Length: 256
Image (cartoon, one colour):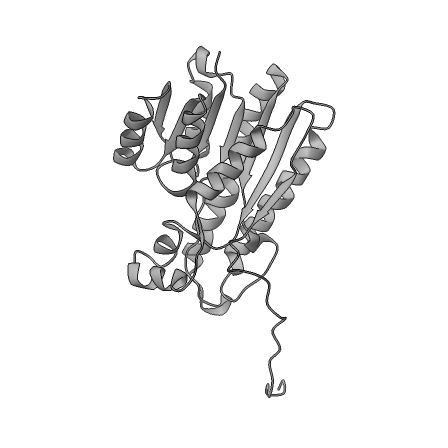
């Protein structure tokens, strides 16, 4: 039987690209996302290549996530790979001006949503004695930048949670990988700037960023390694991006 992958946040960006790449490789696909028209349209496209199960799901809803996994048909419960892709960034204001609702939404999605889906799927993997959890982190989890405050902190959580999963699963043939993209042009900045397309496009102006397909190929590659090989983390940046010098404020007023 073909292997099965479950992908969250599959209606666009990395998640949608992962679905296409896994389908092209012959995998059975379980996709979920909040936007019904998009997830249904994607399911229709993928069904021309492979078996697809699609569900409208908000990963921030704990009970809905648990119910979704519990009610999977028997022939879909053997999940070989979980791609925890659902996530977002909101705003770029400094912490003292940031919107607390935005912070809550990022925590609910990037941290709690990942927790809920992982906790629901992991017992199935333990029972079948195989599996691979791939979390979509970010270089923001390792490298701070102005305005990254809560978003970067949520991705630092993803990084450490991935490592701790490996520690908990020692002795079991279940793999965990954290994929950490850098500058990537998807709907990410459009969402961050509340639908301001012009502002989002300015982020990528004059650059050759990563694209969703680049990350999808990386995700699939991690699953293709021999069973005894665990790729702990993959940090991916476009060649136009690198680290800068540490910020130093000159002529700063003395503290009062």
